[in-house]
Amino acid sequence: MHLNPYGEYAVLLAASLANDPPTDRDDIIARTREFGMTMEFTQAPNDHRLTLEVVQDWLRVVDAADPQERANLLNEQMAAAAAYPRLVDHNNEGWHLHYRDANQILPYVLRAIFGVGTALHLSTRGMHRMGRCAAGQAPGDPCTKVVIDVTRNGRQQYCSVRCANRAAVRRHRARTGSTPRS
Image (cartoon, rainbow, N blue to C red):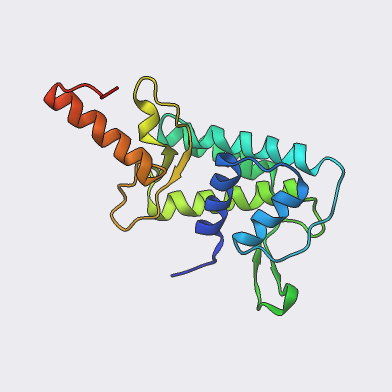
C-alpha cells in the first residue's frame, strides 16, 4: 500500500541539503524543486538560517546510535512540526496529503516533511537505512556525507563510488600488506 510519496524524496532532499549546504534561500528553493516539491513557500527573512538549523537537527536523527534513540529524536522533531494532515490540490497536481499548516515558512515546511519522510523511510525500509558514509569511519578519511539507502538489498554504505573504491583499496592494502605509491 502506497500512502504518499513523501518518504523517499523528502529524506533524499534532507540528505542533499546536509551533504551540500545551500548558500541562500534561492538555493534551498531550487533544491526543493529538484526533489519534486512544487508548492510556493511563504517567505521570511531568516529562511536560510532556520533551514540550516532544521537540517542540523535532522542530522541528530541520522547520527543516532540505535533505533530507539533514532525514533525518540524523530518523534520529538515531528511533534515540533505537528499539524493536522490535510488534503490539498495545489498547481492542479491532484489531491494529496500535506503534513503542515497552510502558509508556513520554508524551514517549518521542511521540518514537517523531513520528519514524516524520514519516519516513512525508516519504518518501511528499516531503521538502519540511513547513516554516514562508511568510508569516513576509517582513520584519516574525511567523508562525513549522509547515505540514504534506497537500494533493493538494503546494503548501501557509501555515499559514492569514489568512497567505496577508496575503502576497497584500503581493505586490499590491509590484506596484502602493500603500501600506497608515492
